[in-house]
Length: 116
Length: 112
Image 1 (tube, rainbow over the protein chains, first blue to last red):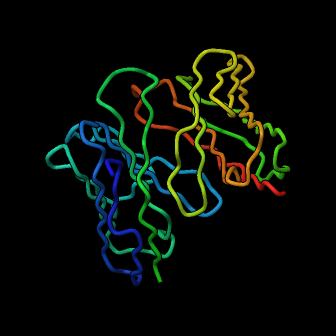
Image 2 (spheres, one colour):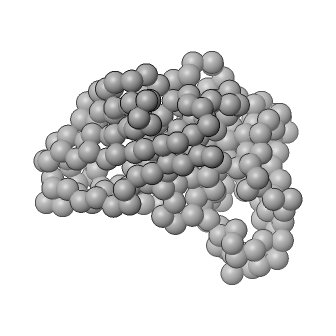
Image 3 (cartoon, rainbow over the protein chains, first blue to last red):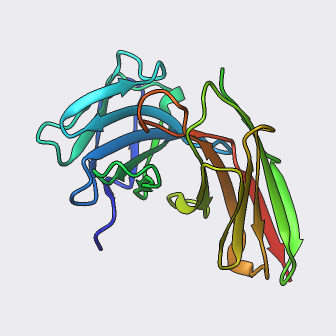
């Protein structure tokens, strides 16, 4: 399977703990996106990487959230001091390095976070 | 600001045709996407429109009117497996294709 992969698929943690999620994009996709999706809502944009550079961050990404993509391949999203409001599905997507406007984002299966 | 509206739920009969509407207001426009999402799974790409008109892809078609800020997804010959959420997403003009703004999605239930 050469799609976007995410790990873990599920994470249950207690309030105040730190969690880290990993995303492996489709190979040769240099653009990588993180979204958050809560029940009954569409995905909300969190942040965007082109290669290793983080080029855009949403205001949703508070200072407890940090994302990295150190070598321009996989990415990690860390949430520090988790709160119950952080419970959501965290989706990663990647997009081809070409410039065609028709190039779409391909989503991974997501990491479902539950904060108790 | 950015606002995307879709009906919350729709029901339809197997074999029928259903139209899911989407209206949007965004700061600039650089394309509209439709995604399908089955419960607990990732969104999967269905269609893309950037110019006015109809794009057809097998049983699925998508229409765009930029002047009206309106799109629809048309599903023909409905099958039970089409029961899913359908997400309308707009790519804003700013930022060079950096993100998609999604609507809340339309949950479609197909019954026999």
